[in-house]
Image (cartoon, rainbow, N blue to C red):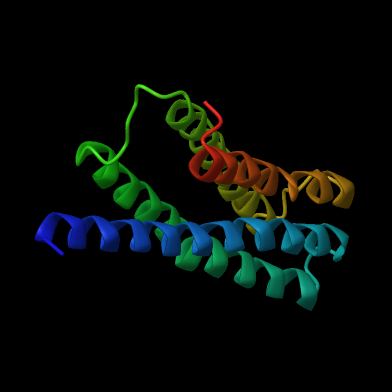
Amino acid sequence: MDWGTFAATWIKALHVISVIAWIAGMMYLPRLFVYHAAAETGSIQSETFKIMERRLYRGIITPAMGATWLFGLVMVFSGLVDWSSGWPWVKAVAVILLSAIHGFYGRQVRNFAADRNERPQGFFRIVNELPFVLVIVIVVMVIVRPF
């Protein structure tokens, strides 16, 4: 195996590992929001959720997103992605949407931390599904490459 193939294999592996960590957190954080929305403001449960949400967002999800983008861009600029096909464009849009949801989650973490949440549990139950829908699109684009 030459150096280029070796490096490309490791970059892909690190990208997938980062994606798994990012998506796991993106699926778990809104579940915390569901329970936090039901907790009484100022209660021990509410304060515990604040800590859990902050640590998950800052300590796991955000670094994992950064690593996902880093390794993804390394693959793009290394020529490992053929942009003449349609699938990379759809995947890129899905990743950008996932990143926007990440930013929205960050705003919700700040809102809960300041006791300013105005959204009901049901909202967060629905929002919880959005990352998974985008992951389905991304995986189909990368594996099936329908166009």
